[in-house]
Image (cartoon, rainbow, N blue to C red):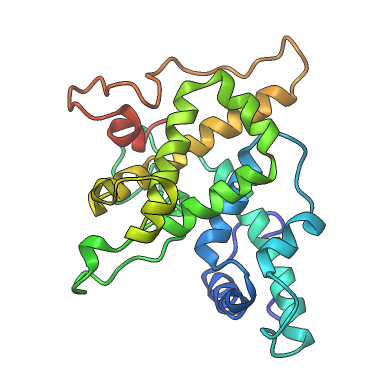
Length: 257
């Protein structure tokens, strides 16, 4: 068994690779690939409602009973790594977001890497013929929305009070559209599908979105009269004050919270 190091921190690259291979074996029986699991756990960690338990989410992560495990040891290893990945998402949420103007190559301090805050995504080969149409982030967004659905009533309460959040979830829903069939099933114009640049810009804003939602979740858990202090800043869907014409979350807000 590969021991998980993430009961209090991040999984190692080796552990993540092992988890990805094990999850891939479950896709044929309805399990989640790693990218979808990242989105699913992200929604459960930052969202409203009671905390999700392994008994509740493991059947959704691993799919139906059936072929997929090489042996009992494989299954035990997968469950250990999935638990570790739950803590990995918590570790990622606890990391500070880069300050405006921080060096994007070097992070805020020695050892920091802004890429560590981004979702784990399947990326296209730059030289591939379909690189420009590759649906980057579609599985992550689908996993996130599945997590929202697990606490639908609590999220609906948030959405009633937060128009910007409704816009964010609408953007994520649009990100799940990757072909004409899914566009038709969602009532979306196939020609309006996100471009690769739009996908990358939205995904760059995900760490700030998750940090904002996690802040809101923690504020609700505090006793009345104990608000968490926030610095004033534009709304996620407001025009960016830099004058670019883009939404703040897709411009300066993609690296600033």
